[in-house]
Image 1 (tube, rainbow, N blue to C red):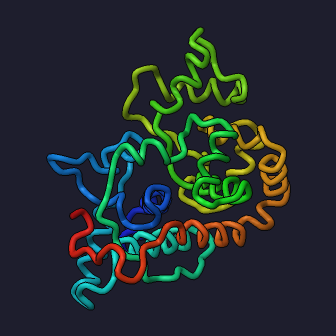
Image 2: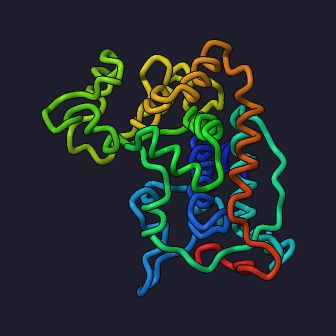
Length: 278
């Protein structure tokens, strides 16, 4: 099913990877990001960082195909983890072994998503704290940031970096001035719809080019640029950028296994949902 979706639209790989990341950072990899809000509860899905998620239709299509084969066995959380792995592999990235047996959580709160998902505006200390809270290392942080080798960012996320960084009509000085000028031709203040490639030129190819982008101060988000502000993350960026990603593929696979093991529900915890959104 993943192959079917990705071959007709390669841009779906990044959203499917992001879905797994956003799931795992809130209550562990329990499918809580898939649940719909109710009249009495605002779910993770509706939190600001999740309002630009997509790919829910892909997960639902896979779930219904899997239910036909073996009803009530495979969780939505496992489907999200497997779809992330397959998506990356299908756009040129590494593959990895996904352990299965995650069960689906029954709680989903927008407030938790807002508090725990790393922000594109975060500085390096905030990012290290976010990752450490989930049992992930500084190396995992710089490696998993490499996911930004695919996908897009929304103009509204970088408008302040471009036009009003400290509230004085200025541009973030950590952004390459020539690239900032180019971005200003694409993103205008008040633009809520336009998107920009995270890794211009190969945004649907999972390569190590993200590290060249960051090393040359063209990282789109403040959280990308932040990787140059810590000795350990900067050394990694420089290494991958100067060696065409010598260890990136294997590092990414290892960090993704760690990500997929965060806060997993097993045994009699949680449930196997019949529909992923309910």
